[in-house]
Image (cartoon, rainbow, N blue to C red; front, side, top):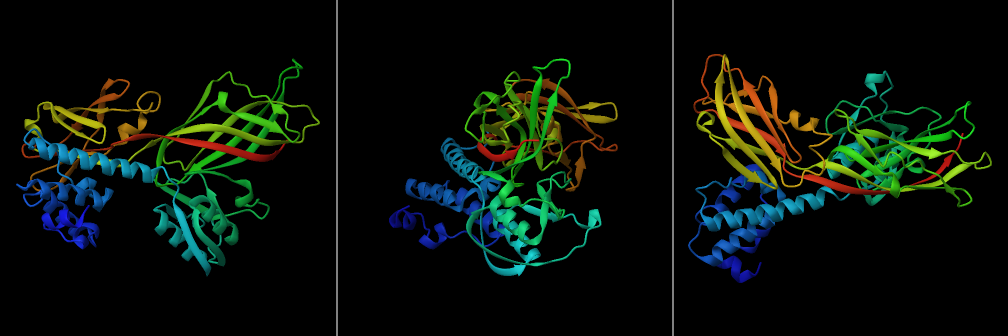
Length: 430
């Protein structure tokens, strides 16, 4: 943005580029920029400057942007959609990049963990009390300069004698515990790929004693991700996988399954990928490398869709970031009220086909005229399509009516496919 354009808009360079210090100031700034002195101004130069200033505030303003409705002026609608698209693309780009960590010097383990969490947005919990482990806080010495999250975390965990517990119940978080005395170093056992860490954890050889040709290996690999993202399934095309022994010869892979689809269950922090390998000759001592290309289907930033006066809603529609929410109607059904709605994604990325359970966990509630939050009492699926799901949410209002109630539905507004190229090395055979 040029200095002249800023001055025409009535904004100084500092006002446009400097981000407000807190949420209230940011909300006030956005309100100013989308109001009559911003996008609604009579002068073209000031409208353009306001649009650029909104973009410069960054993705944090996304939930503060007004909803586009049929009453929104045509030019305002175009500008708001342009701002939203630019900021959503910036947010998606940030999501798909690994977080970086900078730590230097001697510090308590708890301090290092807190700083990693603060710098990356990844929540980390101490589970040692749950396992009756001593909760020591050793001092660690590290020298990390813009190191990716997983390598930085493994460095600190190794220094403190800790490890990750893959089966925590904290949504969007990682748990750590003390590790066994004979545990291997996390830095040497892990393989890093962007947001992901892969580690071979088990290899099993089987032989069918009734058929001498039926001899196979099954390699289990744990795949973990930065907890700030939320995968729902990891896909591994076996056609892209390749394994070699220590001499460089190929180790066969049973590709009959085509693509491994590994769903993420509940709030799990990892998935187990089982690679079906053909057993090599007994002279082979290790899998020198296993390479492949996986894809993680990840849910993006959650958006809140709000519909006022739900009792009057008739096919009311809102669209944001590639997702459209339609509230069809609100009807009394005995002692409860049914709110029928549909949610449609421009690019569903297989997230509504085999692995759609996540969408039934989306937040959905009413806010009554007194500001009270009224939770739904359940739902019924009414439509299942490739990129669209329909639901009827049920509300027990205890004799009240939905008049003046606001319907709130929250859903990820983007479904992202993140490529995960991996290479796992030096796996000893049994």
